Image 1 (cartoon, rainbow over the protein chains, first blue to last red):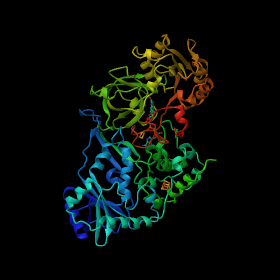
Image 2 (tube, each protein chain N blue to C red; image 1 turned 45 degrees about the horizontal axis):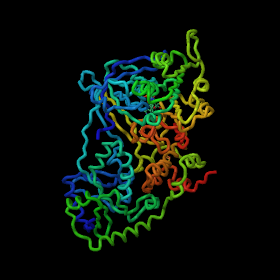
Image 3 (cartoon, protein in one colour; image 1 turned 45 degrees about the vertical axis):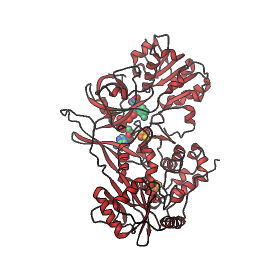
Length: 348
Length: 281
Ligand SMILES: Cc1cc2nc3c(=O)[nH]c(=O)nc-3n(C[C@H](O)[C@H](O)[C@H](O)COP(=O)(O)OP(=O)(O)OC[C@H]3O[C@@H](n4cnc5c(N)ncnc54)[C@H](O)[C@@H]3O)c2cc1C
Ligand code: SF4
Ligand code: FES
């Protein structure tokens, strides 16, 4: 794959060219955090200022609230009560300046939205329309544990182009065909002398800065039911207030609710992010709730990420190690600690 | 690939009030686009999402049988928002159905076997679908003995009363109807809880005999030890679960029990399978 060098003026002019046929999104300062926002003509993203965004980029592909269908219940209308598709914008988009862990997160959730049996058209069409230019990390947070969560500060899978800061510019590596095409469209073409080597040495230096880790080596071999029945869940969940923050900031939490919203006789069928941390999530029509205590909900979240997903897809954890849930949990619940409890659990 | 969230438009063709408390109604739907009926080709044990425009969607077991053509039927208990609205709808109204969803009863495994069906209360819907399927002349030779134990609180709470009477009169199916209690002097069937009747009437256990159980949790709780006592293998006990659902296709993340989604990997599981899965249902 092509490795090139882009200086900062070239970078800005290339992005302008891309804006001709794509919508661009990148981190922008909003209050004290950076969040993804649309880049208008002439705007250059502040890639240096942003260590990472507060929210993950998942809403760019999978909005927090999204209309699926529209309808009318007006009986006089020949289409009364029929669900109608709504117009969607799947014109090409480019996300610039997301972190490699966030780009990788989409690959983890893709298995859910595009199974062999069903394709979620909203997620899949949106994902297909999007290209990702990620920027490798040179200053990971103390809460980052990506290198043991299936990715890393220079992880390539999920990105179309990955950038690494290098003096007055970036070394850019095209990871996919889509990435190669973007390089061409942006007019970025200066071969980087010794680019691959430079990239590898920056990668090694960055990985060494990620000092925090998780280990699921023993979790893999444990029976689901043994871990589920383990004695530490109530204690670990003691402080949790079931606020759902961890699920909303998480790039790999995907649960949603479907609701009909009416205004008079017109209405839309929407889907909205939901959270397994909320008590109503599992209440049956009869009032029975299989997860009626908060520790059960916390257990569900961490078992899903660290065990159910691992077993279901015989793969890595449903977590990229971005550390957002650790930084934002109001009561300091730490997935690394829970993972450690799970991995060191010995059935009595 | 078609949008799995888009319901097939249907029209309510008939509404039957099933029980004396009027809380259970059977809705017969006809597809507005006839070609959708083929797309909805289903097996007994599957379910659909009934879409009531402006109210939402609910997962409901398919009560009609694959051998019945030209319509689909669902029997709905009135409990909350959508089900109450549905109960107030009338013949001719337009709504939607998504599906068929979920796995089904394991028909390939059941062929050549004795089948014992145990149902309680209004969870008899997919069991009706199964019985009608097995009794069809094309299918009846594929199964050995068929036993049905079905119980409700009182005679007036039994579903599908005409069909029950019809099956009762046949000699290729053994039907044991029971009620918890009745003051009807003409009641000619059993009185007693389902577990008790199961103990009395269930065919002997062997590797060729399978039991399908659907009913309220309390019935299942007390019937399972009876089947154990009779020697039924846990591989041969088949159950259908209900969890709160939204998408019905394994995507929205709502209905999981451990790594399985009840909507997509279930709702039908064997008791052996359930032994290894968290009891979050
Ligand atoms: C596979 C399967 C098969 C089934 N088969 C049948 C069948 O054959 N017949 C049958 O009668 N039933 C069947 N059920 C049960 C049926 O799906 C429920 O009774 C039905 O969904 C209740 O819907 P409702 O809208 O009337 O209740 P709701 O009003 O939705 O109430 C359901 C629960 O959801 C909660 N809730 C309601 N609104 C909200 C909200 N806005 N936000 C958060 N929580 C909310 C409430 O806490 C309530 O307890 C089946 C279920 C499954 C999973
Ligand atoms: S773990 Fe923390 S962020 Fe998540 S629900 Fe509990 S309190 Fe909120
Ligand atoms: S109902 Fe959505 S995953 Fe089962």
